Image: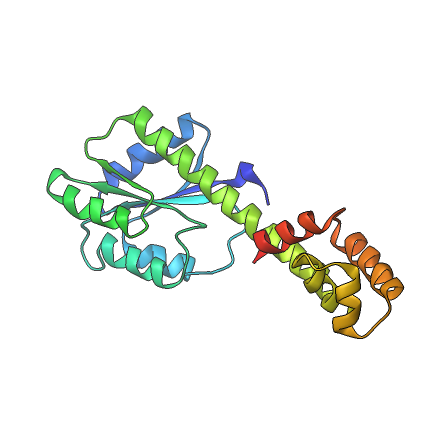
Length: 208
């Protein structure tokens, strides 16, 4: 994952708006890609679930064909708004609608004409959120990979340890010796990269 490849997608049917936003982002050393319709963006992105770099979407509410609201619904359906937060660009008449979409998961909205500095601040915040979500997903995938590397017995011991069970009780429940539990416990800690039962429990919880 490379934060320097963070990309702002601009979807607006007004060419002047797209050009002005792209120029603004260039002055702040931010990458951008422009689309003149929701359909063009959807086709280019193919609503992909696997996103490798931070991103956010500047989305006009009203456009010919598919509206920004309809595209937002599609993104919600595919669970993509965490990795790619949506900032709506709205006219005054669209503000109530934009507020409602924020309640449904949009990152924010900016009313036209917008303040350059305020908009860039919100974009930066959206990209930071995207990065954090992607890092958490990557961390979760790494933890799941470590779990898969455990033996069946190690996983059984790990579940009991993470639940706070003492070695003696684990031994009774799994019908093995306390010494065997201690050996498996040590291997689990080593493979999972933790030093305590509390750390193990937190790791499993955060990756779920």
